[in-house]
Length: 153
Image (tube, rainbow, N blue to C red):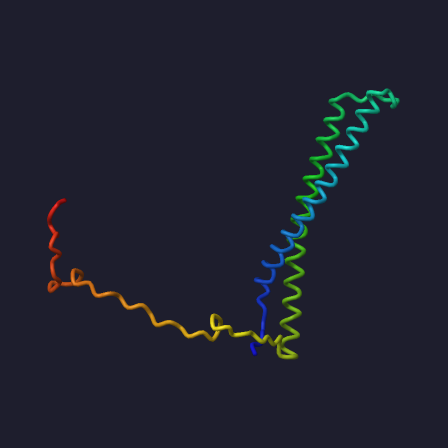
């Protein structure tokens, strides 16, 4: 059995921040696609209503383009802010969990893990260090000279 006595708070912060950032990026991309489709649908409805004369105000193509640009810009900014906040919050929460685990591990002894040894893991024999091969041409004054040494090919 291996017992996890302590978790590094800094390491937990980094891992929590990265995991939260990745999850936030995935959910933010899904949200952006969904909201972008809603903006596109609203724009096409406004265009069709404007062309059929169904509104009391007339919207030009420039107005609709500005609406789409403002909507997409605010959407990208909000997803970016969400990702930063999620990364910071995830890092802080993971750090607090590491502190809580460290305090709990002092009281109860930590988390015990049983790892399976399949011959390639923790208890596998360490191979002997590699020995350098003997090179008769390297070394001091007693080294043999290579037969082609000194000739330009």
